[in-house]
Image 1 (cartoon, one colour):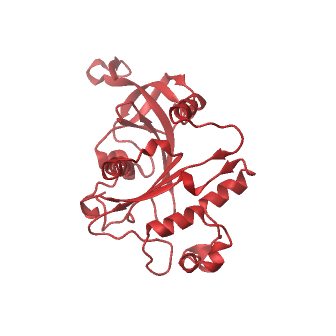
Image 2 (tube, one colour):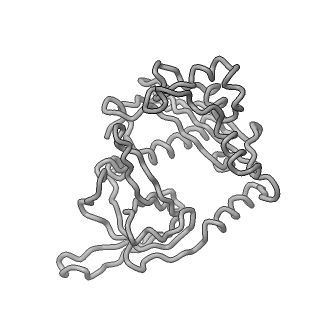
Image 3 (cartoon, one colour):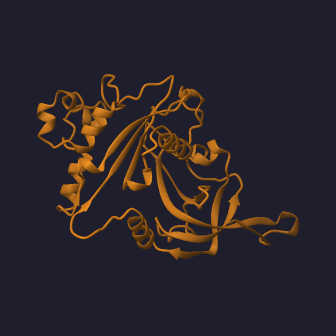
Amino acid sequence: MVKEEETKEEAPEGRKKTITVKCKFMMVEQDDNEKTGEALEYGMCEDEKEEVYYIRDDSGSEDLDPGSIISVELEEIKNPKLPGADQGPWKAEGKPLYRVIEEGASLLSSAEEVAATNRAKYGLTQEGVKEIGFLMVLLNYTDQDLVFTDIPRKILMTEALIWKGTYAKPEDWLTDPDLKQLTHGKHGWRSKTARLRGSWGDVLEKSSGGKLSVPEKKGRVVTVQMGKAWADEICSFTKIGKQGLRKAKEQFPDLDPGAYDFREIFTPMRGSESAKQ
Protein backbone atom coordinates (compact mmCIF):
# COMPACT_ATOMS: atom_id res chain seq x y z
CA MET A 1 0.00 0.00 0.00
CA VAL A 2 2.99 2.26 -0.63
CA LYS A 3 3.06 4.56 -3.60
CA GLU A 4 6.39 6.06 -4.70
CA GLU A 5 6.58 9.51 -6.21
CA GLU A 6 9.28 12.05 -6.99
CA THR A 7 9.52 15.65 -5.92
CA LYS A 8 11.60 18.37 -7.55
CA GLU A 9 12.56 20.26 -4.43
CA GLU A 10 16.20 19.92 -5.46
CA ALA A 11 18.05 19.81 -8.74
CA PRO A 12 17.13 16.82 -10.97
CA GLU A 13 20.23 14.88 -9.94
CA GLY A 14 19.23 15.35 -6.29
CA ARG A 15 15.55 14.54 -6.56
CA LYS A 16 14.03 13.15 -3.43
CA LYS A 17 11.61 10.26 -3.39
CA THR A 18 8.51 10.34 -1.26
CA ILE A 19 6.14 7.59 -0.24
CA THR A 20 2.42 7.77 0.41
CA VAL A 21 1.12 5.41 3.07
CA LYS A 22 -2.20 4.63 4.72
CA CYS A 23 -1.57 4.07 8.41
CA LYS A 24 -2.69 4.53 12.01
CA PHE A 25 -0.90 7.48 13.62
CA MET A 26 0.29 7.93 17.18
CA MET A 27 2.68 10.24 19.02
CA VAL A 28 5.41 8.86 21.27
CA GLU A 29 7.34 10.50 24.08
CA GLN A 30 10.35 8.35 24.81
CA ASP A 31 12.56 8.89 27.88
CA ASP A 32 16.10 8.35 26.66
CA ASN A 33 18.39 10.05 29.12
CA GLU A 34 18.17 8.13 32.39
CA LYS A 35 19.95 10.90 34.33
CA THR A 36 18.03 13.95 33.09
CA GLY A 37 14.80 12.31 31.96
CA GLU A 38 15.04 14.28 28.69
CA ALA A 39 12.47 12.94 26.27
CA LEU A 40 12.54 12.34 22.54
CA GLU A 41 9.23 12.96 20.79
CA TYR A 42 8.27 11.53 17.42
CA GLY A 43 5.36 10.09 15.50
CA MET A 44 4.71 6.48 14.55
CA CYS A 45 2.41 5.41 11.74
CA GLU A 46 1.60 1.70 11.33
CA ASP A 47 -0.01 0.26 8.22
CA GLU A 48 -2.24 -2.80 7.96
CA LYS A 49 0.81 -5.02 7.39
CA GLU A 50 2.28 -3.80 10.71
CA GLU A 51 5.02 -1.85 8.95
CA VAL A 52 5.98 1.16 11.09
CA TYR A 53 7.02 4.55 9.71
CA TYR A 54 8.76 6.94 12.11
CA ILE A 55 7.86 10.61 11.68
CA ARG A 56 9.57 13.77 12.93
CA ASP A 57 7.60 15.85 15.42
CA ASP A 58 7.30 19.21 13.67
CA SER A 59 4.76 21.60 12.16
CA GLY A 60 3.89 19.03 9.50
CA SER A 61 2.83 16.39 12.01
CA GLU A 62 1.59 18.45 14.96
CA ASP A 63 -2.01 18.58 13.72
CA LEU A 64 -2.28 14.84 13.07
CA ASP A 65 -4.78 13.22 15.43
CA PRO A 66 -3.26 10.35 17.47
CA GLY A 67 -5.29 7.20 17.04
CA SER A 68 -6.63 8.20 13.63
CA ILE A 69 -6.07 6.49 10.30
CA ILE A 70 -4.53 8.79 7.72
CA SER A 71 -3.12 8.88 4.23
CA VAL A 72 0.19 10.70 4.43
CA GLU A 73 2.99 11.62 2.05
CA LEU A 74 6.40 11.17 3.65
CA GLU A 75 9.92 12.18 2.73
CA GLU A 76 13.00 10.56 4.25
CA ILE A 77 15.23 12.83 6.33
CA LYS A 78 18.92 12.29 5.71
CA ASN A 79 21.01 12.66 8.89
CA PRO A 80 18.19 14.00 11.10
CA LYS A 81 19.28 16.84 13.38
CA LEU A 82 17.27 16.67 16.58
CA PRO A 83 18.16 15.98 20.23
CA GLY A 84 18.34 12.26 20.93
CA ALA A 85 17.88 11.27 17.29
CA ASP A 86 20.60 8.65 17.60
CA GLN A 87 18.53 6.98 20.34
CA GLY A 88 15.32 6.74 18.34
CA PRO A 89 14.01 3.24 17.52
CA TRP A 90 14.60 3.88 13.80
CA LYS A 91 18.33 3.88 14.54
CA ALA A 92 18.27 0.42 16.13
CA GLU A 93 15.93 -0.95 13.47
CA GLY A 94 17.88 0.51 10.56
CA LYS A 95 14.86 2.46 9.32
CA PRO A 96 14.52 6.03 8.04
CA LEU A 97 13.06 8.96 9.92
CA TYR A 98 10.51 10.80 7.77
CA ARG A 99 8.89 14.21 7.66
CA VAL A 100 5.36 14.93 6.51
CA ILE A 101 5.22 16.78 3.19
CA GLU A 102 3.38 20.10 3.47
CA GLU A 103 -0.37 19.50 2.99
CA GLY A 104 0.49 15.84 2.41
CA ALA A 105 -1.81 14.32 5.03
CA SER A 106 -5.52 13.57 4.84
CA LEU A 107 -7.83 12.03 7.44
CA LEU A 108 -9.42 8.69 6.54
CA SER A 109 -10.90 7.68 9.91
CA SER A 110 -10.95 9.75 13.10
CA ALA A 111 -9.64 8.35 16.39
CA GLU A 112 -13.25 8.15 17.61
CA GLU A 113 -14.26 6.12 14.56
CA VAL A 114 -11.29 3.78 14.97
CA ALA A 115 -12.14 3.26 18.65
CA ALA A 116 -15.79 2.58 17.79
CA THR A 117 -14.74 -0.02 15.22
CA ASN A 118 -12.54 -1.78 17.77
CA ARG A 119 -15.32 -1.77 20.36
CA ALA A 120 -17.72 -3.28 17.84
CA LYS A 121 -15.17 -5.95 16.92
CA TYR A 122 -14.96 -7.18 20.51
CA GLY A 123 -18.58 -6.53 21.44
CA LEU A 124 -17.76 -3.73 23.86
CA THR A 125 -20.18 -1.00 24.82
CA GLN A 126 -19.62 2.42 26.36
CA GLU A 127 -22.94 3.05 28.05
CA GLY A 128 -22.75 3.75 31.78
CA VAL A 129 -19.51 2.75 33.51
CA LYS A 130 -16.73 1.73 31.14
CA GLU A 131 -14.84 -1.40 32.22
CA ILE A 132 -11.12 -1.30 31.44
CA GLY A 133 -9.07 -4.40 30.67
CA PHE A 134 -5.31 -4.65 31.28
CA LEU A 135 -3.00 -7.18 29.65
CA MET A 136 0.38 -7.35 31.40
CA VAL A 137 3.19 -9.18 29.59
CA LEU A 138 6.46 -9.96 31.37
CA LEU A 139 9.30 -10.74 28.94
CA ASN A 140 11.73 -13.33 30.30
CA TYR A 141 15.26 -13.36 28.84
CA THR A 142 17.98 -15.91 29.56
CA ASP A 143 20.56 -13.47 30.96
CA GLN A 144 18.58 -10.77 32.79
CA ASP A 145 16.04 -10.76 35.60
CA LEU A 146 13.02 -8.50 35.58
CA VAL A 147 13.40 -6.19 38.59
CA PHE A 148 11.85 -3.01 39.91
CA THR A 149 14.34 -0.28 39.02
CA ASP A 150 13.34 2.41 41.55
CA ILE A 151 13.61 0.31 44.71
CA PRO A 152 16.76 0.48 46.91
CA ARG A 153 17.18 -3.29 46.94
CA LYS A 154 16.70 -5.89 44.26
CA ILE A 155 13.09 -7.05 44.09
CA LEU A 156 12.11 -9.41 41.32
CA MET A 157 9.16 -8.43 39.17
CA THR A 158 6.65 -11.27 39.38
CA GLU A 159 3.20 -11.84 37.98
CA ALA A 160 1.77 -11.59 41.52
CA LEU A 161 3.40 -8.19 42.21
CA ILE A 162 2.43 -6.76 38.83
CA TRP A 163 -1.14 -7.93 39.39
CA LYS A 164 -1.27 -6.29 42.81
CA GLY A 165 0.22 -3.10 41.41
CA THR A 166 -2.63 -2.97 38.92
CA TYR A 167 -5.56 -3.90 41.15
CA ALA A 168 -4.61 -3.22 44.79
CA LYS A 169 -6.55 -0.72 46.91
CA PRO A 170 -4.73 1.91 49.02
CA GLU A 171 -5.48 0.04 52.25
CA ASP A 172 -3.84 -3.11 50.85
CA TRP A 173 -0.43 -1.41 50.96
CA LEU A 174 -0.66 -1.22 54.75
CA THR A 175 -1.33 -4.91 55.29
CA ASP A 176 0.11 -6.82 52.34
CA PRO A 177 3.80 -7.74 53.01
CA ASP A 178 4.56 -7.94 49.29
CA LEU A 179 3.31 -4.40 48.66
CA LYS A 180 4.99 -2.99 51.78
CA GLN A 181 8.42 -3.70 50.31
CA LEU A 182 7.60 -1.53 47.29
CA THR A 183 6.56 1.61 49.16
CA HIS A 184 9.93 3.37 49.19
CA GLY A 185 12.05 4.27 46.18
CA LYS A 186 15.57 5.62 45.80
CA HIS A 187 15.29 8.64 43.47
CA GLY A 188 14.39 12.22 44.37
CA TRP A 189 11.28 12.63 46.51
CA ARG A 190 10.82 8.88 46.67
CA SER A 191 13.89 8.58 48.91
CA LYS A 192 12.25 10.72 51.62
CA THR A 193 8.56 9.88 51.47
CA ALA A 194 6.48 6.81 50.83
CA ARG A 195 5.35 6.00 47.35
CA LEU A 196 1.71 6.90 46.74
CA ARG A 197 -0.31 3.84 47.71
CA GLY A 198 -2.83 2.49 45.27
CA SER A 199 -2.79 1.03 41.78
CA TRP A 200 -3.49 1.83 38.15
CA GLY A 201 -7.01 0.59 38.63
CA ASP A 202 -7.56 2.74 41.69
CA VAL A 203 -6.18 5.82 39.89
CA LEU A 204 -8.43 5.36 36.87
CA GLU A 205 -11.55 4.73 38.91
CA LYS A 206 -11.03 7.78 41.13
CA SER A 207 -9.76 10.21 38.50
CA SER A 208 -12.73 9.41 36.25
CA GLY A 209 -15.25 10.05 38.99
CA GLY A 210 -16.42 6.45 38.78
CA LYS A 211 -17.00 6.51 35.03
CA LEU A 212 -14.18 3.98 34.58
CA SER A 213 -13.99 0.65 36.35
CA VAL A 214 -10.98 -1.69 36.38
CA PRO A 215 -12.27 -5.13 37.44
CA GLU A 216 -9.85 -8.01 37.84
CA LYS A 217 -12.06 -10.18 35.64
CA LYS A 218 -11.06 -8.00 32.65
CA GLY A 219 -7.31 -8.40 33.24
CA ARG A 220 -4.63 -10.96 32.59
CA VAL A 221 -0.91 -11.29 33.28
CA VAL A 222 1.42 -13.69 31.45
CA THR A 223 5.15 -14.40 31.38
CA VAL A 224 6.62 -14.91 27.92
CA GLN A 225 9.80 -16.88 27.31
CA MET A 226 11.78 -14.90 24.74
CA GLY A 227 14.28 -17.71 24.15
CA LYS A 228 17.34 -15.48 23.88
CA ALA A 229 19.62 -13.15 25.82
CA TRP A 230 18.73 -9.51 26.47
CA ALA A 231 22.30 -8.66 25.43
CA ASP A 232 21.45 -9.90 21.93
CA GLU A 233 18.22 -7.91 21.69
CA ILE A 234 17.91 -4.88 19.39
CA CYS A 235 17.00 -1.94 21.63
CA SER A 236 13.79 -0.89 19.88
CA PHE A 237 10.66 -0.91 22.05
CA THR A 238 8.53 -1.22 18.90
CA LYS A 239 10.32 -4.33 17.71
CA ILE A 240 10.54 -5.84 21.19
CA GLY A 241 6.86 -5.15 21.87
CA LYS A 242 5.67 -6.70 18.62
CA GLN A 243 7.88 -9.73 19.14
CA GLY A 244 6.72 -10.11 22.73
CA LEU A 245 3.03 -10.00 21.79
CA ARG A 246 3.62 -12.41 18.92
CA LYS A 247 5.31 -14.90 21.25
CA ALA A 248 2.57 -14.38 23.83
CA LYS A 249 -0.03 -15.48 21.29
CA GLU A 250 2.13 -18.49 20.38
CA GLN A 251 2.66 -19.55 23.98
CA PHE A 252 -0.91 -18.77 25.09
CA PRO A 253 -3.18 -19.77 22.15
CA ASP A 254 -6.33 -18.47 23.88
CA LEU A 255 -4.85 -14.98 24.29
CA ASP A 256 -6.00 -12.11 22.05
CA PRO A 257 -4.01 -8.95 22.94
CA GLY A 258 -6.38 -6.82 20.88
CA ALA A 259 -9.23 -7.60 23.28
CA TYR A 260 -7.62 -5.49 26.04
CA ASP A 261 -7.77 -1.71 26.42
CA PHE A 262 -4.19 -1.46 27.70
CA ARG A 263 -1.24 -3.72 26.95
CA GLU A 264 1.75 -3.29 29.27
CA ILE A 265 5.04 -4.92 28.30
CA PHE A 266 7.76 -5.29 30.93
CA THR A 267 11.40 -5.71 29.87
CA PRO A 268 14.76 -5.70 31.63
CA MET A 269 16.26 -2.28 32.30
CA ARG A 270 17.77 -0.60 29.26
CA GLY A 271 21.48 0.07 29.66
CA SER A 272 24.93 -0.15 28.13
CA GLU A 273 25.38 -3.74 29.27
CA SER A 274 22.01 -4.93 28.05
CA ALA A 275 20.21 -4.56 24.76
CA LYS A 276 22.17 -3.45 21.70
CA GLN A 277 21.93 0.28 20.97
